[in-house]
Length: 471
Ligand SMILES: CC(C)[C@H](C(=O)O)[C@@H](O)C(=O)O
Ligand code: SF4
Image (cartoon, rainbow, N blue to C red):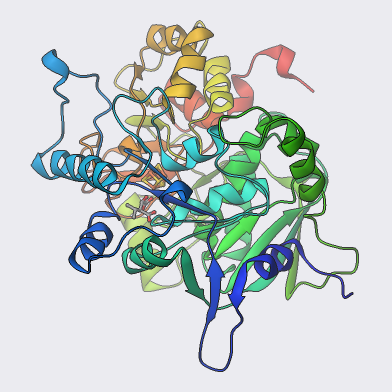
């Protein structure tokens, strides 16, 4: 048998009908994740055509984008940003009820950002095909699943047929050799990678992240890396499952139990690229060279080490980006005054991210005039963080501790920055106006976000991490 990549193994196992001529392949979908923004039209279409859901048991829904992150007011009334947000949430509640879909709504102890709760519930498993009407579905690739975002029309197709029409993407291996230095994390690495290969470097490909640095990562870190694959233009990003993956997944609500677990792990162990498997393209990254990395422009590819000068603009587009950001060519981003710090989003809102932020903030106060929001990715993360007392560290430092949701990552729920304000954000997109009209976003790691909140300017976390962190 010819040597296969991990992607090819998962793809082949799900092809119902292969590509032929102009016709794309038909791919079976194991898990369909749903949130309130991209599902209403699909449900309406189903209703209009009198169609039922093909496999409601393979769906999982949550409320995340439009949900307020301030607690309920009296009588359980939620402080929605506007009538649309409230209606969107009510619509998903009604749709899930009518069609029999498991919804993690306001009453769920596990509600959260769709890409945080899928793994937490063990719904995300190695070797699966996973889709969601959301571009950051690539996050689930951290478990060796083929996971990607789809459009609202496709959401309807999957609902009705549990299948999807797909062209087979090409494969790109990103080998990350060596070790990340102290104070440099998964977020710095993925920003560095996108900075190197560009926002279209992954277009047409599925990325497989491999190498020592990836194998050494926790699941949280692997999710951070895979999450941003889409920001490099890739269809998906995945990592071969290993003992770290299996240990993390064991005994989650939706994972197989007892002997079924052992059988599953045995099957999952085969999910790695064979020796001699060929990729369409390969890139090598030296982890040891990655430094605390931030963005200086208006897409995630405009990323540099924070102490390196901002490059000169060569195109009209780049000039516009630098103007918007007020970034100065020749000057480093480090030292730039900060107005808001946002810790959250499906990139960096898990327990380990919050622990990292707390390590930097503990016993200190954020700078005068800086507003800092810490938004856990899920109710589970919130509970775990509070059990450890992390919320006390945040609140004592002067930050706001919120209820889970996408929040200021996309600013659909009323959490937003004012025009001109500079936000150091642990999220994944720094597009114009993403965090509020005229707001300027600098993407960064949780440690950098915390250090910048303390300093009031973009700051190197290595200067703030406690000494016992020294390698
Ligand atoms: C609202 C949703 C469709 C969107 C996405 O697809 O990613 C959002 O989650 C984002 O991060 O921009
Ligand atoms: S946290 Fe941000 S990136 Fe993630 S799903 Fe929500 S809006 Fe999209």
